[in-house]
Image (cartoon, rainbow, N blue to C red; front, side, top):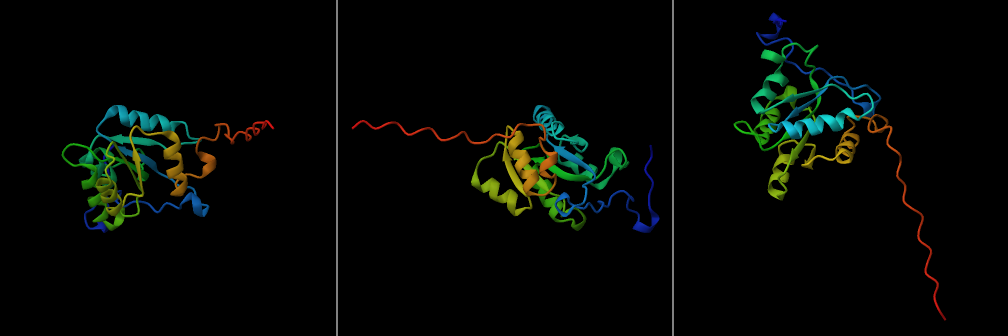
Length: 188
């Protein structure tokens, strides 16, 4: 389906502007999708599988690199139909991708006011403080070490107000601490 141009937007695609999404924390319902940018199909599939276990998960779209992430976010080319490719409520971003890496994507987002509000969770095998600090300085809201764990992602989503607690793993049993062990009897 061809995408239409909005002549009032100075030649820019009418779908390139991100929609205003109320946050679940403020009582609104987030609309959109989760975008995963990862060149490793196994890691992307693993993240998508974790998200699929959420109660009423948003749609998940996967791109395999930074340039494809730019096209998706701008609603260009293949991604021009926002009915099929809604603007994301979250970007899960791998740092180590060829050509345009995750740091490049973070810089690109920071340089564009229309995308600065997009929450980004970085996924990486990097564990060095330098890389973690750089990701936060460039606008990442959370940094998770691969392989991704569902409970880590759930905590990040809750802390960021992206998905309310009731939407994340609602069917999982609540785990409470076991009762304290009795004190051993002392011999006198």
